[in-house]
Length: 199
Ligand SMILES: [Fe+2]
Image (cartoon, rainbow, N blue to C red; front, side, top):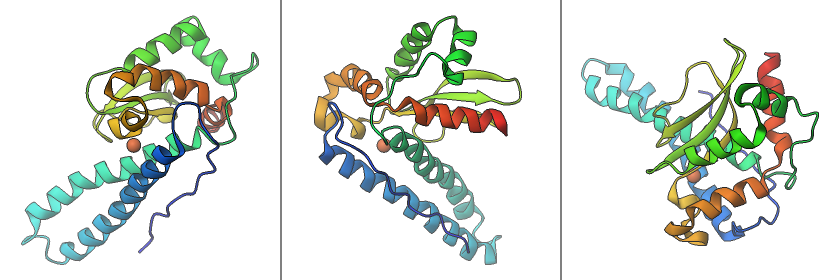
């Protein structure tokens, strides 16, 4: 059976987010990869008697969405820090698409930051929808509840407390969001957008 492989990330020193927090956070990511693989193995095994194991299989299938999306969300998130901070340049295709959708880049940014401040644990995600050729902002509860079908994530911001509390305390959530954008290599989002629009 094919296995999901844990990715490695080359993350530079970040503003506000400590190397220790990134190290611990990467351990959580590793756990999602491990459990996504384990659940598929269990499903395979229990499917040999799917009638007897029907309830357990149903719960495992539910849990798979949590573990898989936890793995994939973190791969987007950590990739955004690679290469160091880079602001979007004026010719950026993604920036132009954001301006077309929301009127101005700063207008979108303010809205995205407000979504990130949603109470509870989850993700602020900017998606591209190839079906309608437009960008969509969304909040995803936990790792998987509210993901938009058929859309491609372009920018993913982890808003679980484990991503910031050790460095910022619970009251510093807003500063963490600001620092995420200060640390963001916009080219990583640009590359995801270009790949999504080409597919
Ligand atoms: Fe996380």
